[in-house]
Image 1: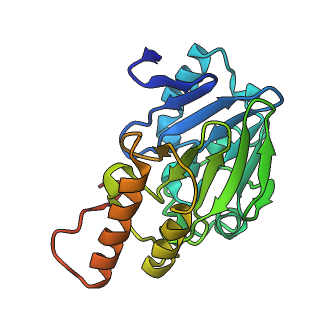
Image 2: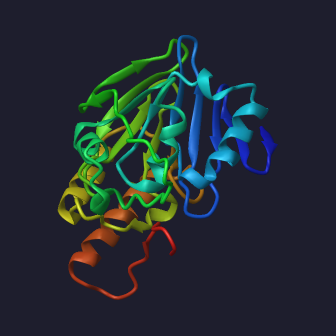
Image 3: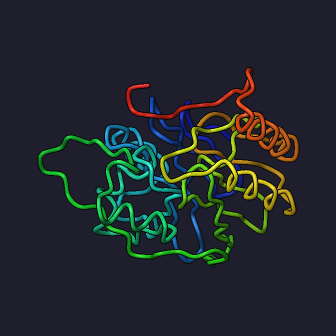
Length: 240
């Protein structure tokens, strides 16, 4: 059910909040116990995100947990607006880069003179689970795009929030400064063992053909290792 051109309810109480420009998408899950936001996007997209939340009846302080799929600026930049009210969660490999302000790896360049340090309250590990009552979310560590990349698997609907690990069509994401093509191939191979009905990526379109996307992503990654021509690689970087 569409709310407007940048809000879409994908399943009951699961909303796709579409990012603009270089910003990642955000996904809102209204839980029985807690409200979760997956990725906050870039600083300059915050007003758009806030407007979407308000349309759905949420204030910033109504978000209980923000889960970052990895440490790159386009997914963490708006954390600053939530971190005094919500628990910020990221894989421990991402948390180290965020909390020590490793600008080389995170590519974070807000330029705000009053910029606060970004916090991570929950340092996640593989198989960590969030029980929201109506939905259950499992953290799946999927290094490759970056060392701290995770996907988030929802058991009830068998959907996977993939961040920049996997995109519709199997388009290969930029392999970041802390990433590895070898790790990427291994991560996608492990995801192939799960029953997944839909992919909700950090950029681009939602996919209902996850098996095809995963196979194509592995082929693209192997071709990249061989430096073959015709490999579609997507770069989501500031100014690109």
